[in-house]
Length: 92
Picture 1: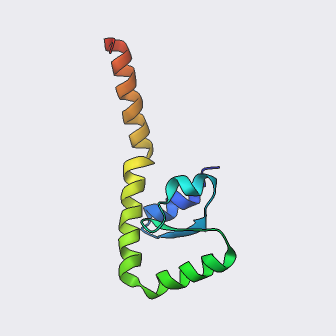
Picture 2: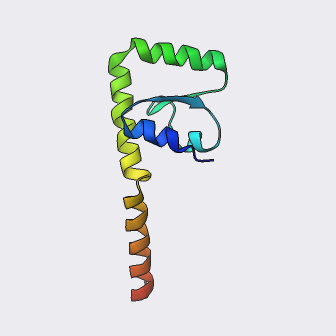
Picture 3: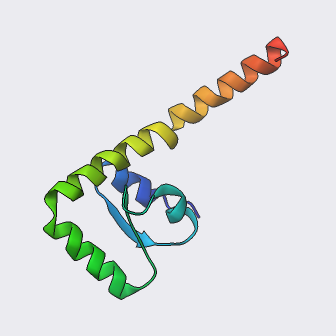
């Protein structure tokens, strides 16, 4: 599934370390909003790296929040649907 908790963490400005699967992969660009991993060891390593690098953690947090605001908030979907309905009504 989509994994709403990932979006919630990103919205709070917390970079996510998550498995490179399904909905997590949709929400996180590796190295930009968090880290995609394929093993427990990799998850531990990436988590430690983020804990040690406050500047990187903050930048990823800002990028993650912006991604959620831009791509996953319900207001975006409502705006897109309203635009679609308007286009259909006007014949575009």
